[in-house]
Image 1 (cartoon, one colour):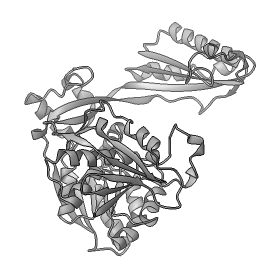
Image 2: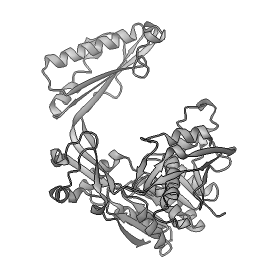
Image 3: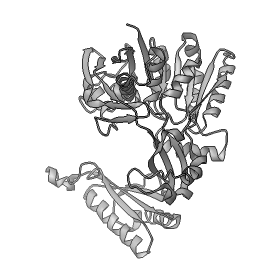
Length: 456
């Protein structure tokens, strides 16, 4: 039976720079999938684009492509990536220029997927009765419309498939779902029907397993983590898929990490929600039907996946300006490290109260004592024996001025607070803008993906 290999190259913007190169050179692969986008990433890219119209995409992707293009072109490997962010055309142009510099002019066809960016259409959509209500609170978007920074619908695999069918070797998208970057190549390779819900669900599960890179091959693994071999040279996961919807998760030989049922299971439940209804634009996958089998060392077979018809909605990821925050830290040494940190927190809070600052929230953590595991005394541990504790305190406010004043109240504690401050980590903190997340739904008919081709 024909198999198709899709290799994970990036799990987020900032992932291991060596991974894409190792994936295309370490063994045979047909596709390289590179996932760059998280919810907050879109607002960061939109802000970059507002300052420079030529930006707004993951610039790391262009550097990576310049490094791997000789191998990609030589071996006929196809690449799918949502690195286009809010400016896929500019990203494609930058990759085309890199290809020309490498002597590949006329040898590389780039597909560009747009249509997800709704920022310029929001007022018209709201006027037509699309409230874009917050899925968590039910509030209509008009309540924060004047503070919206970005708005992107999650497109599915269909435009990726179209780009591949039109001959694109590299497909650059905006906000396409993480799973769609893997499902698209599978639909294209096996010619799956648009209503083959079980097959589409299987491809969606495959995409979900590898979308976070090495998290499925030994990285960030809880079970037996200390025995995961050679994480310094971890092999990123690869989907080896068949037309019947079954697939294996593998990695290249002689690489570190581990492909195991336990590790794949951990990734499956990551950001899963309702296991009976993992909803994407392409269909609904029932995670309770998934069967995992350890076929051999570093090979897990996935089968039995069942799916349901797609809904008539698309999720919209909206980011908006909320206010300002700042976080400061002080480290206290033994003896009585926790007591000193707690005293410093009380003193600082009293001073902020005396200043009458309009702070919306104050949050304190005692790193090394209670930040992760709660009350140590309840666990039979003696807090007095803790050798050092970091007081981490953060504040939030709609306006910048009270947050800025908070940042000026931390450093004085070094001399006029409890003794034994061993480090003023990072110096005086700076106020930062808060970008808040607004999830919503929109009728699929209101979003029209567009596919263009660019020749290098």
